[in-house]
Image (cartoon, rainbow, N blue to C red; front, top):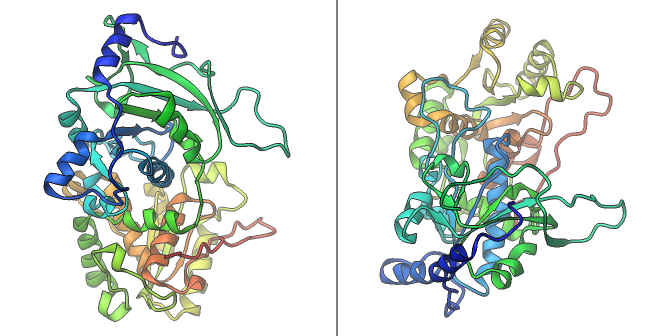
Length: 430
């Protein structure tokens, strides 16, 4: 039973393995270098997390922002480090014959940039530092079985019996086996369920007072809400999520070669230190092309009303190109081969980033998505797909680069959609 404690000897082992971390002398906003870094890590407790398997790459990036705000709350009391959950086994990553599990964050993001916001380490580093593939305490986050009555929302958290079938099972040594990001040798020493209703930092008292576990994992972390969506802390974390340099270089080279787009001409100069990058909205001009994110596949079935047909999308693209006097359009899409061929016939001016097999193997599906987003983020004008997290991430990237919101917060409308509401502008806060 995942809701109960393990056997006595396991608790004894836990008692030996755990030590409550002493308070740091002051709150470290970033991971220090050299000797101090080693000392900080020696004294730290580790927070790990995972997300519901069906959730995609771009929602997972949003969950990272929620967990980062929790880490900031914990750091006010104790030394904590966030262990970055390896990427893999995502629904949209469907390229065959490519190894896409246990992918470190450094493949997609710049770790020194993340560390300027909160202390983070890769999972492999956690394994090396913590003395083995063991996580002291796993909390599976869930809703309340009784739900909540309308008009009576309150933030609360309680240890409760597990509602769903537990995705962990005990081995012969009484340790818990689970997915653990594809690391088959990883074990949980104790698993229990927490019903949670509220923002990320609601769990801080549980981690600080109810458990002395050195390493704690929050599974189903998407059940935590944002502490302050759209606030300064939100944007600091979002700005720190700088794409890996090698992916940005590929995107920049593609822009230069096929879209006559350079940072100098487009007024999209990029500072490698995100803490020093503050651009006034409306400064960026963007490359001489239209950027489009056209979601297909499961969106056609799940969002029929507000997603256009291919012909409807092409009609809108043509009118936008005419309006903004643009001769090229860059399209990021998950359309199947037949639809892509149809698009090419209808839109000969269309440009796409189509990786070779070698590039796909090197950058993986996640890297290709980032390259697509980076190119869309530099367009003169962008239009995306309704309620798509892929489009949302492009909005944020363009906000960071300093584009006029009118050129960013746009989406396609469905042909039968009566009230085509455009995306909300979440203004960047420094």
